Amino acid sequence: MSTVADALQALTDLTPNREQVLADALEGLQSTPRRLPSKYFYDARGSQLFEQITRTPEYYPTRTELALLQNCLPDVARRVGPNAHVVELGSGSGRKTALLLAALQSPVAYTPIEISRAALLSSIERLAPALPQVQMLPVCADFTRPVQVPEPEQAASRRLLFFPGSTLGNFAEEEAVALLQAMRSTMGEDGLALVGIDLHKDTAMIEAAYNDAAGITAAFTLNLLERLNREIGADFDLQGFRHQARYSRERLRIETDLVSQHEQVVHVDGKPFHFATNEPIRVEYSHKYTDDSFDALLQRSGLQVAASWNAPHPAFGLRLLRAR
Image (cartoon, rainbow, N blue to C red; front, side):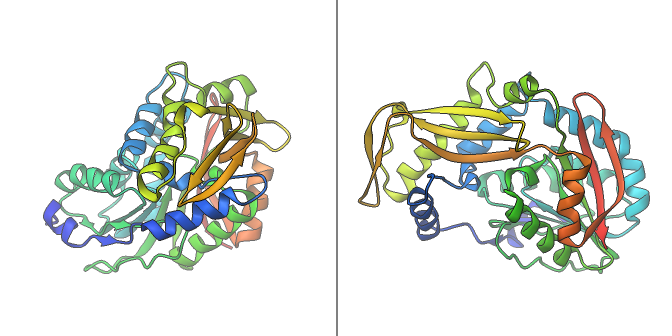
């Protein structure tokens, strides 16, 4: 029987340190155009704000994917088979994970790889008591970097990588290909990956999801600057930047920026960065896919679709992937 204490004892902690965060921030702010990595949204407050975003009326992806997952899980479980080791990239709150683990046939272990230590521990504290037969092997790490997956005590028949939420869409094309290639390597020749993808649809619906009326998404985005102020000695004026999220139909993606409200100088670790009025910092992409655009990524990544399920409205998909 696996307990919360067992899971915490098994925790692999590779939380990005100050030097890593600083290096990433300096590299992004020195680039043209300026950018900051979206992975740093998820400190404790950022993770809480994102969970609030998923419950806003405008944010359709989470509730749509949850409903779709519930409908297709019996088929997923049949295709995966018994005794799987589930490895989740960016586990978040674990709401979808609980459904998956409960539906699978005797999963032997669960490894969430999550950059936010607070979100990781919170999800484990909820999942471990509900699933005592599943060994919990949490890893606090940036899953975009190579991570050694712990081996469970009981031999697994295969690995199932779980990557819901259309998080893949946060990566530009070359980054997405590299991540999918890494996933193929991690899951092995006999492994599978269950991936959520948001599909191209009406521009107004997409933009509303990233600009909720309550302003929670704006607070979530600006929290990135607050984190940098706290952790790496930056002096961003949070009132001096505004959240902006627009959908590019040409590039099939939401492009989220923090836009300078006026001419200003920001210091990061003592280094000055001059911002002009209306100058943006690109902080996130959220790509939306068509079958053709997603298949193009898979072809470059050595993966193929083993099974697919779609929610018709709002359009959202789940894809079970295997090696080519």
